[in-house]
Amino acid sequence: MKSFKEEKEQRHEISIVECRDKQSIEATFGVMKQLRGDINIDNYYETIVGISKKNQFKLVAAFNEKRECLGVVGYNYDYRLSVGGKMIYIADMVVDKDQRSKGIGEKLMEHVKQEAGSEKCKAIVLDSGVQRPKAHKFYLNQDFGITSFNFKINDDGSGVNFRSSSSRSVRNSQDLEHNQSGLMSKL
Image 1 (cartoon, one colour):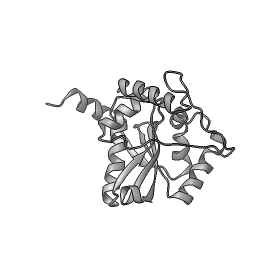
Image 2 (spheres, rainbow, N blue to C red; image 1 turned 90 degrees about the vertical axis):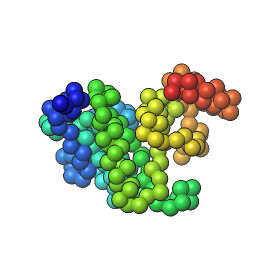
Image 3 (cartoon, rainbow, N blue to C red; image 1 turned 90 degrees about the horizontal axis):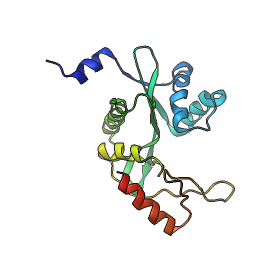
Image 4 (cartoon, rainbow, N blue to C red; image 1 turned 60 degrees about the vertical axis):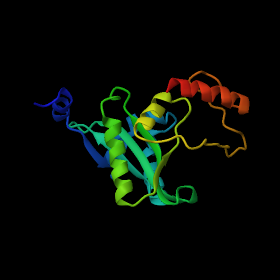
């Protein structure tokens, strides 16, 4: 006898597809915009193609039987001393807000893990904004560990001033300590 989950998955076929053509890339825009709110449909395709050519970037999406994008992951290969060689860096990963907790993120991550294995990568690395505790919980459940902080300076020389889910900016080490303990308590 099949479980409810197995029956549900049979009724809703999900395909994991590497998006290379204009139609499939543009089909991911609505979901990607949920993560990257400042992107623009007018140059989305050209941006993805440009990143792909320069950085061996791959855009992989989960589509349902109606060819609607349910989730998308963007990643590239890199080499770093910190991991001892070749790795996959996940730059973007998002599941449509109405499709979360339905196994789509797991399917996308499984694709990345399989590719990392076949390409003999030493690690899969990603950064996740501190304002995304649900994403952090997902990554921890996918066997990722928290190994470092990511620091950023803008091209105008200013530091990044982002808002966490607690509406506090992280500006200095005291703010960081407070924010970090708050985030960990949500996991």
